[in-house]
Length: 384
Image (cartoon, rainbow, N blue to C red; front, side, top):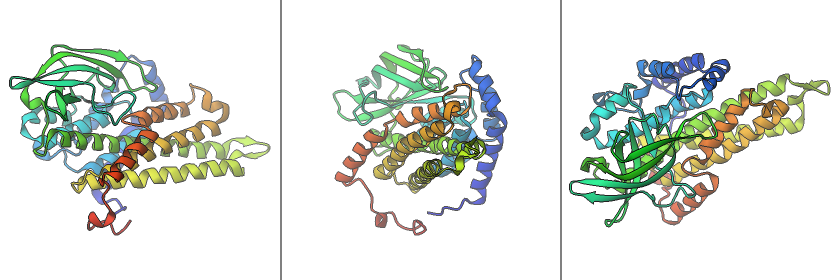
């Protein structure tokens, strides 16, 4: 694995940084929070014009190419700016649909062009590793879906939703693409800890076509596993950006805040907390990049993905707590920007499993032999 970015990757990062930082400053985010908008349509349009909403999608499907590692670089920048756009879910859902191919080419193209928003409804309340409660029952050449999905990010805004369900009477689980205007699908707005709009989905005997069950040729359960893996890596990349920026702001604040006649950043206890935060951020970076790189090598490694999400959960928790604590009273002031990073990190931390569920899944993956040793991965990793 090469840790140095190539010229294309550097260009993606620079382009994303310029767009996002120009439109997601503290004052702009404050104004957005006071507005009635669910997402920043102007920012979304600019990202689409720049080709960033089509990242990770093949050019023949309307995207701009590249892979999961470039997607992670982009989402890191979006996390650092707390960009109020449905970028993470739309990118990953479109990439999952692209694994299936032609049946959903039109929807993939619309998403890549920024004309469609996609949402992922695969989280299970209480235990991320449990089988979905939502049931899918065969109905002729199609399926009937029944159940509830809660706290679905961008579920109210979505054109289509990728939804996990148990295949009743057949065993196993699958991933379905469900049009948002499907008869029997009711969507109710929910409020979360951060600015991300959420939806409660109630599916009452929703009929979908046979090709709504996504299968890339190796089984529906395998594609769901790939989708969850991509989503967890994407969440980890977002958390990396959130935590790194929170730590950067904290370093700047403690360097300027004078107490007892000197900057508080010169005090040993403050320095130790900041150093611990730096270690957490770098652990998040290395595990996230490795998991993303493996996906681009065609390897959906459960253990590596779970390790990345574990560090995103525990590291993001510790860093943003440190950031809020070291800002003192300002950290508790909801009119001061640092609180947004704390809330955003909490939302990412719990999505698709927090630290303890990730450890439980990681242990199960190792016990089941699903953890790949370094020697089995092959060339390109000598640099690590």
